[in-house]
Image (cartoon, rainbow, N blue to C red; front, side, top):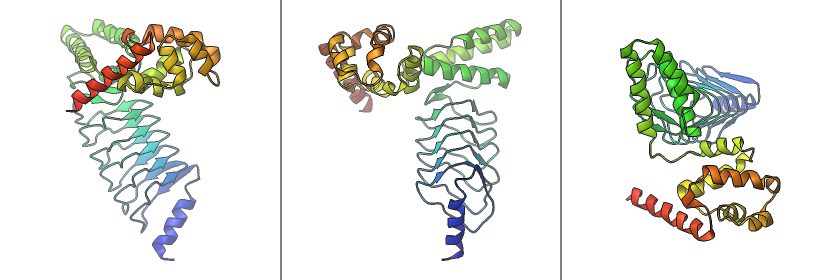
Length: 299
């Protein structure tokens, strides 16, 4: 066994600890699909690239590393802090259950499929305006950053829930306290956000949130999302509900769903477009409509 192989075995043996700090070593490469069962602090000058499919069950911190990008399909159960690091790019498939801090980096864009469960701090970066996963980031205007951060947090809620809600009220309160010039900038930014979001498809997180509000299992959100936004006809239970076939829905209901039929009916009536519910024929037409639209957009 070489020294590097021995150090790699020792490194992997530490992965189940509560916290792991990777300092200077002769290890220069980590294996693809590596799973870390704890927090990972990376300040290693030897490792220059992280493996694709890396999974971290804790939080992830980068400090003093030569790494310049995050790999594809990175999954992190905790928070991520890459502030003041050399990282300049992020790859698709990035999923972070906690918060994400990329303060004072040279990152200019976020993955279009970014999934983030906590807050986003991109102060001191040059992130370009656009839609990034659940975030709609407008042009950065000359607004005090704490208020701008509140705007961004409100935008995230807007993308996942469908409205700005209390955040818009809070921003209006800030407007009432500010001078006319700053208040105009606040409101202009809100309008920028709404312009970015208008016409955008709702996200998976939106449907998860809506199901939670109707006390329905969030595991059903994926099939609902794929039907409404992608035109994939759902399986028997949901298909019967969308077709207003309650007898069929009761026959095909499994697990906890039989006791939630009324909640599903309320959810579909209040949250699902009229053109996507009512009969099996309507369900088929909705599917064909969405799939045709997607093909046109891809041409």
